[in-house]
Every structure is written in structure tokens, then in C-alpha cells.
Image 1: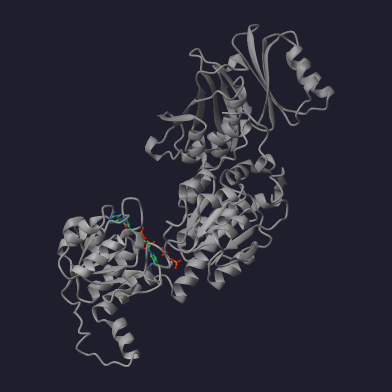
Image 2 (image 1 turned 120 degrees about the vertical axis):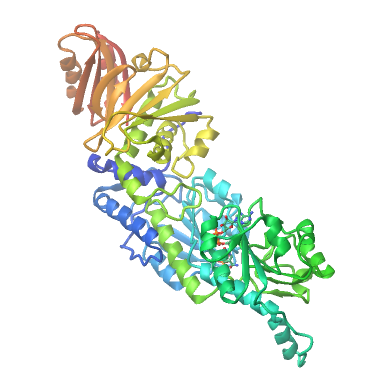
Length: 624
Ligand SMILES: NC(=O)C1=CN([C@@H]2O[C@H](COP(=O)(O)OP(=O)(O)OC[C@H]3O[C@@H](n4cnc5c(N)ncnc54)[C@H](O)[C@@H]3O)[C@@H](O)[C@H]2O)C=CC1
Ligand SMILES: O=C(O)C(=O)COP(=O)(O)O
């Protein structure tokens, strides 16, 4: 890991009694104080409870914290600046109002990729629907300012998630508010296709009266295969049952009992496509589903099958579908989505007489658009406030109750990380870190993702310009060649505490403070939370007990009278306030470790004088 100067971003400084909230906020994101309070009209009880719990937790913090900009370039937000939120596609008015009450909203629709890239470095958040491609170039062009991308809908295949994660940008979506709309559109296409509604309408408008040409097929008693039994697929199945259809479904990840509960059999892919008279697609577009409906699979279908696609165009090989339509394997198709949107004007598929098309209207009802707008506005505002999102796509979702319980341990984890990296001589050669969590709880019940992310942040940030948060912690560690292994050990402690102690060990390095090394050559520090405050409880094999606040001076010296006074005097002469002191001896008059907490950072001369005290053998100054 290359060492560099201090990180050029925003630092939240909070009085020590609120340090846990501060650290939690800075772990996630980007810090903005709303200019006015934002009222939440949550459509989902989960997101409402998450938002409220975290908001309450942050209320106290709001009054005491100050935002300090350390100059992240010309566009860095500073104290009192409202965040800028770019909305690149039409969003419901209620959502826009919510966003306007929090930040500056720039609604710029139909931006070219170049225009989007040139605007994005001025934005803290971007809200899109399916029409905006949020590519790696967009994240690069953002120059670190973009904190969150909100997808006002379900499918996130238009967002480069890998790039978002690498750049530490949170991606959130609105997964529930358009489910019914998409399902209703699927049913509309199913029924409309079976009765040739669109074709008959066009024919009449062309002045014709073709009753014999547009004889349809009935739905009742026919088998419908729902491919992808998630939210939309389930609602389609429910409605199709109401139409008297026999519904089967294929979904490798759906629980059979959920299907059984609504009278649907879960079957294999091959069985589904070979049995059905109607096939409705409801799976996401992923590498595994891309062009899943291809020549080979069309050939396994019943002749005369009818296909509905309200999912993503890319799950069908569109050329293969044209061939299947021409050969009669597929009698009809009804498509709302296309590989390329809008599709080329001369698309054979769109022009095919047995194909009914709509321009990606699945989510386009007034109700759904209002719902997704509120859902996404809440998620984006929450993310800009540093809250964990209930709809995060590229970060772990930590339930609010777990979050509040872990708060002080989050601070401890980051401080231990910061401390241990400063004990490494050179700092840059760390590649193997072991974290041991000791707890009375069953290891299965100790969620360490957040703690690991904070340890990573603590280790990387002091020696790099990379900003680490929950989104990019694991990726950044990997990038820097830092392997973090974790061990959970059950100990006899209070089960009330999620974690009794956290120990960080670093192997294969030299230490600036050799007493931090264990017999096996590893640097080791261990900490605990005491009365809500993080404490250092061991360094190397020396037990100490000092609260991890402010700055820390560690000395190893010959245990003799007057040492505390000598060091205290040197600090006092320079008006450096000592906030605690702890001494641990191997034996009386042998060696001792002295840990001194100081509020101010002593100047170089003062530190030099402490190092020169005759009995002092090792000495290090650490900023926490
Ligand atoms: N046309 C439109 O305007 C809309 C389209 N959509 C699209 O509909 C799709 C489904 O949305 P939701 O139901 O909300 O998502 P969901 O995540 O609730 O459901 C997707 C289901 O597909 C399943 N799945 C994944 N891989 C599969 C595979 N290889 N074979 C079969 N099933 C597989 C998953 O297990 C999951 O149960 C998404 O692609 C979404 O983008 C959603 C809303 C509106
Ligand atoms: O939610 C989805 O996945 C959709 O496809 C809806 O897309 P839209 O927001 O209408 O562009």
C-alpha cells in the first residue's frame, strides 16, 4: 500500500460523547446536513423504521457536529452547502418535492452520455430510471463527488455496479412500488395478445372490419409458465390463476412453499418451457439469463407457444425469436422491453405482425410512478444523510436494531485499525491482517461486516488517499493487497454485548514500538467497549486500560519513581492536556508500558524531549 498525505475529503468532527454516531455516519457516506427537515411518507414499513431509528440516533449528533471540508477540489461541498441531486429521467412530483426540501434538484432529461459525464462531477446524487446508462465513465467523471445512485425502479442492469462499488458509490433502488404495475401490464399483454387487440385496433383505424382474421385463443384452462417467481412473477401468477389458467413457475431460488401457497408448482426450466402454452418472463437480466431464450430453447417449446416479456429485452435472443415466430414455433409474442431501447426503427421483431409491442410501459402507471419516486427519494436522502439503506444494492443491509447495538463497536473497530497501522514501521507493507472477535454469542449471530469495513477504513485511510466506506471496504482491501481474515471465538462474557473484545493482529511486519509485538512476531492490539467508550485493553502482551480518544503516547520504560511526573511536566510546559494515563508493569522496577492520552497534538520538539527521557526505551505517538 502506498503511503500518501491525509485524505482530501470531508471529516466529521464530533465531541467524544457522540463519537459512535459520527463514525457510523462517516462509514457510509458523504455527509450533508439537511437544510430543513424532510418528512417521510414511507411506502414500506421497513424503510420507514430504518429511516426513523437512524434519524433519531443522528438527531443528537446534528446539534453538536461540525462539518469540516478539507478541500476535495473545486466542487467539494462545504459547511451548509446543499447537496446537488441530478434527476436524469422523469420522476413523480411527490418524490421531487421531497428531494427539493433536502437539496438542489437538477432535472435534466435526455442527456447524452457526454453531457451526463460533464455534469456529474457537480452532483452528489443521481436518480435514474431504465433509460440512463450509468457506466464506469460516469463514475470516473464524478471525481469522487457522486455518493449515491438511486434507481427509481427495480432493474439495475443499466448501472455498472462493479464500478459503483469500486468508487465507493452506493446504489439504491425502489424494489417494491412498481411490482403491481408491472404485473398488471404483463396480464394486459397476455390478454391483449390472445385476442389480437392491438392488431385489430390498427386494422379498424385503417378502415377495415376483419372479424375472421382476428379470432383469438382462450386463456382458461391453458398452462402459463412464469419464469422468475419473484415479486412481479408472483403477482402475475396470482392474477393468471384468477383467469382460470393453470400456472407453473420456474425459479431456481424461489421457495416451493411460497409457490404452493398460491397453487403454483415450481418446475425445472426444461419442464416449464416444454409444457406451457404461454410463457411469461420475470427474471432479472444477468450474465446467467442473458439470451436464455435462444434457438435451442425455442426448439424445446410447444409449437404455437405465446411469449410475454415485461422483464428485460436481453433475456431473449431477439434474432432467434424472429426465427421462432417465422417458423411458427412461437405463435405470438408481446414485448414491453428490448435489448436496445428504443429498438431500431426497422427492427424485424417490432414490425412482425404476430408481435405486440409497448415502449417499456410496465412501471408506467400514475400510482407506481408516485410510489417509486417517494421510495427512491427517501433512499437517496437517507444515503446522503449517511444512513444505511434498506434498499442498498451494493452494500450489506444491516437491520436498525443490529446497527444501534453495534454503534460503539464500530468506533472501536476503526480506532483499533487506525492505531495498529501506525504501529507498523513504514505502514505500507501490510498484507495480512487477522481480526479475532471474542463474544459470548454464537459466532453465527455476530454480524462482523460492519466492523470489518471499519477496521479496513482505519487501516487504509491513514496511509492512503482512498476514502473507505461500507460500499468499497472489501474491494479496496483487495485492491491494496490487504487480506483480512476473521475469527469468532466464544468466550464466557455477557451475552448482552454483541462483542466482548476485538483483537487485530498483523504479521510479517516490523513495529515502530517493538513492545506491540507478541512472542510470535505479530503486532497485536486488543480493545473493548466500556461504558459505551472504546478502550485499548492490550498492546502486544501488555494489558493496559486506556480510553481511545484524542491522541495516544505509548512509552516503554524502566519502571522507576518519577516517570509519570517527568513526562507529565514536559507535556504541561507546552500546555498539552493529559486526559488519562495508564501504566502496566511486567514486575516492580522492571519494565513498564505507559499509555498517555492527550487532547492536543504535541509539537515535534515536545515529542523529541519525551523520547529522550533516559529511562524511556521505546516511544510512539499515535493519532486516533
Ligand atoms: N417492464 C417494466 O417496466 C418492469 C420490469 N421489471 C423487471 O422485472 C423483473 C422482475 O422484477 P421483480 O419481480 O421486482 O424482481 P425480483 O427480484 O423480485 O424477482 C426476480 C426473480 O427472478 C429469479 N431469477 C433469477 N435468476 C433466474 C433464472 N435464471 N431463472 C429463473 N428465475 C430467476 C429470482 O430468484 C427472483 O425470484 C426485473 O428484471 C425487473 O427489472 C420490473 C418492474 C417494471
Ligand atoms: O423497474 C424496472 O425494472 C423497470 O423496468 C421500470 O423501468 P422505468 O423506470 O419505467 O424506466
